[in-house]
Length: 492
Length: 103
Image 1: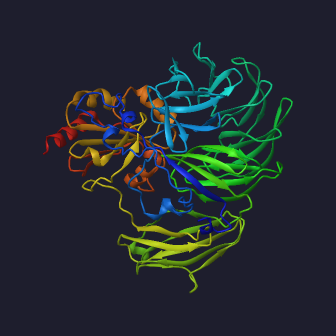
Image 2 (image 1 turned 45 degrees about the vertical axis):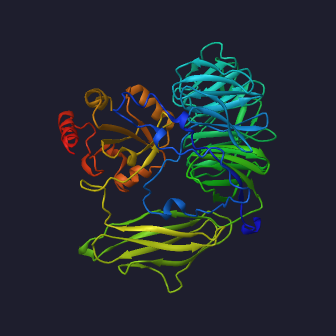
Image 3 (image 1 turned 90 degrees about the vertical axis):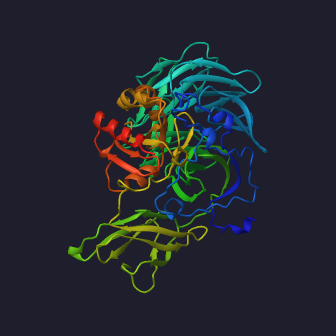
């Protein structure tokens, strides 16, 4: 069924493996402090779909073009059930789903070990996996043998094996280092700054992504390793990956993709290309750097280190990518919120690519000015001209500032601006629709709200479903009959 | 949130009151760290793509308005919205008690 894909298609789904948690693993005791008081257990809300796998032809990339914007304000989120990463060991892929470490076998996930709390980070060396759970316990999990646990009390962001040490990026607290046999507690090294990722190289060198402190080359034995070279960044350095011939690729979240080289004890940024994403997942596959963020995979050509170049990007049908592993020069696996997707990459594909601002149009209209207006920016981030066709609005009080063609053409790396006008000041909800010549000819449907109403007292609470820090999945609908106190906050 | 845990949640254990902390954003280690440091025993949820905050708060309300809180009654209707950083506990408790007393 490959003929369904346009020749421009930069990626193709080979298979998906669902990772919905098993009921047994979903029961978090910590989240239920008193029987009957807080019966928020994922056991009631999670449907077990273990082992389901689409047929190889079934995955349709771009099946959800414009997915995040198509249905208006999303009311159900949080298909995530695991928070951990994806890693490769002895030729197989491993990931976690809540408390379980699973192997992604052809027939579906196979249980390898069960931790005491949901896993946050996972890595591997040879035939041994290493994991850290959300209660701060560190684990050594031999593929053949009993898991070994160390109560370290240290929650980590990412893990890496660095020689004979297990090194954890702790975020603001720096790194923590333990011997691979976990015979002694990890030692925290805070002098290196805020560390988001550790990439071990050879000869006692490693590259760190250090948030606002940029990238650093670090030398020496742990815990006495010191920074020998730094590459500053304007925005947070969030991820690093290793390519061939001494090439390192780093992500500066919301800023640039860097090609970095190290010679002796000097790390240098030799090339840059814009990288707009949050820097969640990065891998190098052959001459391609691949990033995966919310629901897009982006391919960059890094064969010319001095001039890395964005090739194409595409939705891969999920809402969130947590991690990415390169299988070979043309295949990657992405750990999404609730599944792992194996993708085939085509570096020869170039395509137009729309980036829309905003994705939900809100117009503040007043009777004094007989209405109002809002702008929509169509940016073409792709390498071919973007055609936007069939621009329509579905309400008589809405109109577009366009000639009769109802179409826009946007050159590569260019932008077009469309004004949407509204008459009158009464609230209304409508839609702006169009299609494009992006891969898969996607249709877009943007919600338009005039004088939007915020959720207020007397409204029915918008339903939601979200993962918790203990791996549980909590749905508002399951809490009917209780008095619910929803407290939004941000821990920065 | 430690105040809600200490003064309200603990006092109302065994009732139909359920607090939910919703961490806006995808910084999971930070959310996990907050749950540990604040010692709350109720669920800490992760709104990793801001979908809930968008649905509840809509665009236009700035992040500086955090924390915001909603009290939803047994029928799923929003009954109180709190925009204060630290709502007054006596009044909050009275609001909760009134909703708990409803059928």
